[in-house]
Length: 216
Image 1 (cartoon, rainbow, N blue to C red):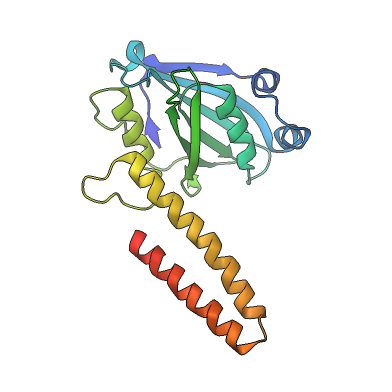
Image 2 (cartoon, rainbow, N blue to C red):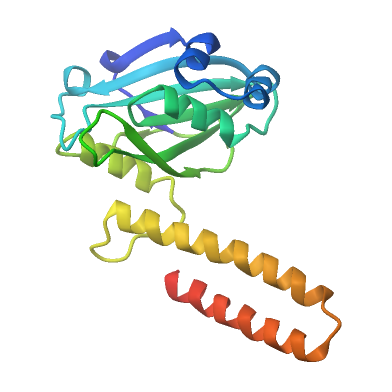
């Protein structure tokens, strides 16, 4: 877990109704908020005035939310709705009993000139004990660089030499896509009775496995 400057503390409860008003979630997702989320606290605002880093390329602030959970498993739809409601990059600290988990999506300003944000893949850590050691924020030249350094710590796949964060996120997305395809093909192959068809599926499985290995 990162330790944040005291000056950046915001520490305000964010009512669920405000999120509903901004993001208009479905009844199903509202039910998830009710059954899974105890409280949402807007813990920190990392901005020029609180951490003395300049904005860059539309990255003006980074928000840190702490969500106390009623259950250990939180549906990603909940985080997606919060990201939709708040037009800033957000790092979530999920808390359940004495454990913490960090989650964040790769979030970037829209390229259409509006104030909208595009939310892409989510990344998360394993559950950690709340008493585990905390680490200082990465040394960065501006807010965008800080955001990228923070997000890198959530991605299991190490970046290749010179690989940018967007390129790494794209590579992880391809691995996830091919992994889903592989799972589907393996299930089909295991159920297939016809020998020739089974051979064809096995060849497709090997092809996708090779693609995944090349991306890793």
